Structure formats: C-alpha cells, structure tokens
Amino acid sequence: MSTARPVSLRDVRDSDLPTFFAHQSDPEANQMAAFPARDREAFTAHWEKIRRDPGNILKTILFGGEVAGNIGSWAAGDKRFVGYWIGREAWGEGIATAALEAFVAEVKERPLHAFVATHNVGSIRVLEKNGFIPSGEDEDHKPPLHAGDGEDEIHEVLYVLSRPVT
View: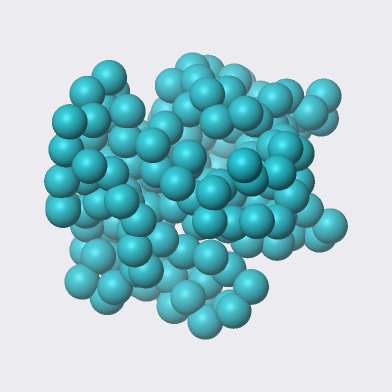
C-alpha cells in the first residue's frame, strides 16, 4: 500500500461524472463488484436521481488531487448503507481504505452497512480495516449481467460498522 500522495474527499462535481462513468464501465471492475455497468443514459439518470436526494451523502475521492473514485451513503429501508468505487488504475494503493476511513469519520450515523461480494477480497479487507464486521446476514442473487444464462449466483455478505466515531 502506497498512499504517499494524499487521499481526500470533496463534494461531487459535474466534471467528475465522465471519470465515474469510465470507472463503472470497466468489465474487470464490474465482475469484482458483482455490479453491471450502466449505459450512458442510465448512468446519467442514476446520478441525477441520487444527487437530488438530500438524504444521500456523495463524495469524490481524490488521490494526489486527481479523481480516483467515489464514495457515498444512502438509506434503504431501516439501514444506512455505504458504497465506493475506485478506478482500477488506482487499485492496490490504499486509496479505498483511506477514503472509507475519512468518510466514516464524516458520517456520524451508526450503524453503517455495506454489502460486498464474497469473491471481492480487496473490498472485504477495506471494510474490515475500517472496523466493519460481518453481520451474519447475507444474500444470494443472480448477477444482473447474466440473469437467466446459467451463471452461478452471486453471494454477498452484509458488513456493519457500529462503533462511534472517535
């Protein structure tokens, strides 16, 4: 892990969205996250919707001043979730770990929850380094990219962070 260049968070800007679109269009990242890419129209509609919701907390992750990804939090049912996406060119640099640490220090609500695909070992490590633990709840579902084509189900585990900010 090398975070010699600083990791910081700031509010999402319109100029960040093309980078976010490229990140979520990466087939290797889609497989790792077990999440399908959106086409440009669906991506734009999604970001317009989530940016309008005042209950969402959305941040751009900067690494050395450059956009490296995004991180956010939203309510779903009775839970508050957190999720992040780092561009593949920045994987393995400790960026997600540092960004999540900064984010959970900013977001005071607890508990925070995060679903992660069991094969995404890197993201599991990021969550665990930041104090998230498996909740015992998990979920199996057909991957949206391959539903109905005989692919194995995706298995996700729900992680939870209950400790207060120190």
